[in-house]
Amino acid sequence: MAQYRQRGKTWTYVVDMGIDPLTKKRRPQITKGGFKTRREAQAAARIVELEKQNGTLIKESDMPFEQFAKDWLKTYGRSGVKVSSVRAREKEMKHFISVWGPFPISRITKKMYEERILELNEKYSHNYMDGIHACGRMIFKKAVTQGLIKINPTEDYKLPKKQQTVEELEKEEKDINFLEKEELAHFLKLAQSDGLEMDHLVFTVLSYTGLRIGELLALKWVDFNAKQRTLRITKTIYNPTNNFEKYQLLTPKTTGSKRTIEIDEMVVKMLKKHEIKQKEIKLKNKPIYQDSGFIFARDDGHPQLRKVFETRLHRLLKKAGIKKNITPHTFRHTHASLMFEAGATIKEVMEQLGHTDPKTTTVIYTHVTQSTKEKTSQQFSKLMKGLLN
Image (cartoon, rainbow, N blue to C red; front, side):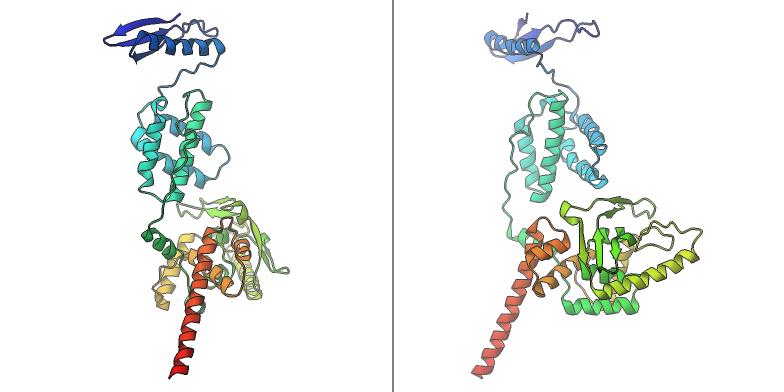
């Protein structure tokens, strides 16, 4: 039976929870105040008593949000997800911890969650906000299943649509960078004549396949079929610390990223030649060589670091006089653009690149078709000038 008392102008109820049958000790009472009338306090207490009778009563936790979020992240990390996913979630949940850290998780309301999301939505891209919102949903869903909160503040909340500004659209187009085919040919010739060990091979394979740099560095000889002229992409390398011994092989970025692609005969010959040279290095460095079958291995057998090829790329670009903002990923965009120029369909390019979302593929396609239109327009202008002069 609940008890009621008036404090100033408000009423408080106290519900006795009885004896715990397991511990034989009295359970803590449930108390809540702030009701304007005794009747309001009685109605609220009755709900608690009914939940107690039905076995559905949840005593919300006073656990700080930060403590629960960090505990959740540990569990999430042990659930078989990628290390890169754990790092992403850790980064995303910090946007909530920064404002709710010491605050009891049970006292975070739907209004508080909505206001925080709207505040962040003004700062970050829609894709990043998708990740932040997904992280918030997972944290509070876990709190509900563990009986720490009654109401999930993220339930039924939909991320607001974000209208891209002109500046954002322009930036998106700049992010999709390319090398024109003449620039690519010049660069690859320079990589052959002035490049360091494996430079010409690496940048040629990136250019001719559209592989992500992580996919390329994870390739093993078992993934290469010289007779069928194919490469099998089943993994990507993860090495955020750039320590050549502390890498991890993870599944590809998306389900569509797992694929087998055909490669050019020239690339096949280059890989076979590289294999012979690598065998010589194995014999020479036999005492220290850790043979895990990587195609693009260091002289000790460990996979080469991404950072090494990024540094070498900048060196060659400087020599080539190419002033564009080029990264290893640029060769992927370049490969896609040249496939479109050669007449490939969006579906064919998506399969080659392992894209599941056509957005990036379509942006590249738009760039190529726009470039073609401009060239056609220029050719028409030249033709008309010749006729009019």
